[in-house]
Image (tube, rainbow, N blue to C red; front, top):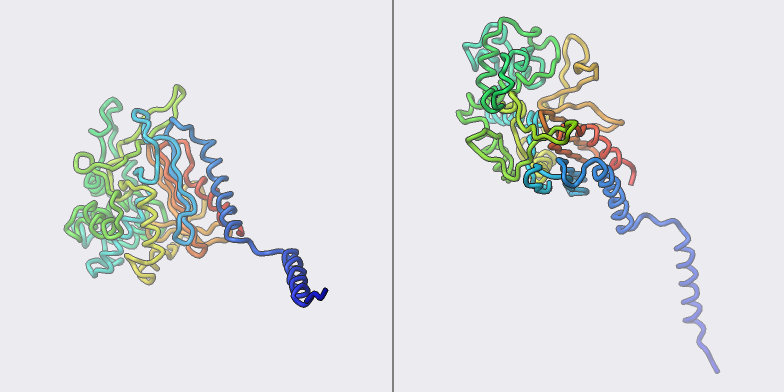
Length: 384
């Protein structure tokens, strides 16, 4: 019987080649890459599951990689009365995280030609005392204004009074500042983080635009980006959708501590937002939807002062632009900010060159959102 072995030889040659190919180390497949991502997410999930019990105040966590959601999860509840679960739509008080929105509002007015970074405070508020007349918009933005801290100027409050009745508002801050005779230092001479400066910037937005600060943020930032559930909260004027309430851990358990005497100011910390909306904000920054790359450059340029490199109160080196800290981390360029107020801790860590953003929002005072965000970033910045 005759057999045509040419086909079998061809098959055997192909099989041998395939066996050799399988012995060569292959690059990760799409499935392997997905598994790696899931492994990182599992690690993050394990951390937060260990920190937050199901029926206590918690946190919302978002990781964005090149514009896509790599990890998103909520832990714990928005309040103890309803035990409503935290999710991507839950709105948290951002506290000083707000400053990047205040800075963006000012930058839009500069882009519109209605304001200049060198415009002086005295040009906008002619009745401001002499010590503050030469302060520029740029110096307010980068914390070199020297304005006194309004928290230290507030009169004593009645500890037994409802907190909402003793809260200071933006115009109250302006009046306190007008009663002072001197700045902490000459404008531009030093760097000192200033909530007063950002309250004043919110009032500048109102004065120049002719619109309330919250309305300007809505019309020029939130609405165009479809951040439909983000707002500058003003009690009695608007409501926070899917609101998370702040809490503090005490010896006998959790207590709702949602407001403080300084919780009603807007420009320095009054915005509420959610993971879902902040993902849109991150996308706008990444794609330059509101401000061009050139228009954003001043915000991402660290300030320099004659007194030497800026440092925070604890001695930590500080690099600050407009509404963003700019210190690199582990050799990675970044722009970041944290927020801290009674019952809330928040953080955003952006690594633009790495395409990575981490956001942590918490409605409890005992979680270090900034440290947790960096811990997460460390996982996602590891080589894939």
